[in-house]
Amino acid sequence: MKKYIQITAGRGPVECARAVTLVARELLKAFPSLQLADREPHNQADGCLMSMTFATEEAIPQPIIDEWQGTVLWRSTKNPYRPGHKRSNWFVGINFFDEVELPHIDESDIIYETCRSGGKGGQNVNKVETAVRATHISTGLSVKCSDERSQSQNKSLARERLLLKLREINEKTLADSQTRQWNNHDNLERGNPIKKFSGPL
Image (cartoon, rainbow, N blue to C red):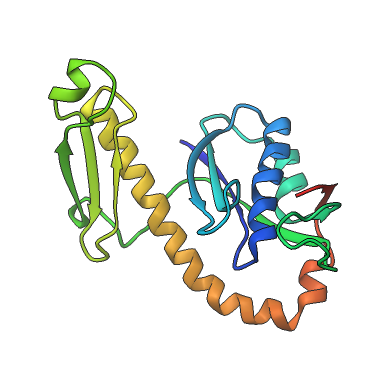
C-alpha cells in the first residue's frame, strides 16, 4: 500500500508557493526514496507550486512523520517576487496519509478511454493506444496518463492521479472554512511551526 506526503501552500501568496518547492527539496534530503505523484503549479510564477504530493511504497518511519507533519516555516533572506516586502515568514503545511480513498467514489463513477500517446517513443507509442484517460463522471475531472508502455499500467496510474485530484478538491473545500479560522488565530496557527528553514526564495 502506498503512502503519501502532501506539501501545500494552502491559499497563501506566491512566496508560499515557492516555499512548497524549497521545503520539498529539504524533505527529499531526509527521505530520498519519495517519488513525485502529483503537483499543482502556481498560475503565474515558474518554479512555484501550490502543492506537491509524493508517494512511496516504503513504510514511513514515525520519527519522520513526527518531525515533518504540521506547519513548516520558510524565513526568506531574499524575495525576488516582492523586493522590499517587509514580511519574511512564509508557511506551508505538510500532511501524511496512507491511501487515496474516497468512499463515495467507485469504478462505476470513472470512465476509462484509450488513446495514442503521440510524441517520441517508437512505433508502439505512436500507433498503439497505450495512453489512458480517466474521467470522473459527475465532476468531469479527467487525467491522461502515458508514462508507461503498458495500457494496464497507464490505467492504474491514471486512476491513482484522478483520485489524488478528487481528494485535493475535497480538501480545498474544507480549507475554505478552515481559512477563516486561521485568519482569526493567525498568531496561534502560524506562530508555532514544527520545522523552520531559512534562505532566499
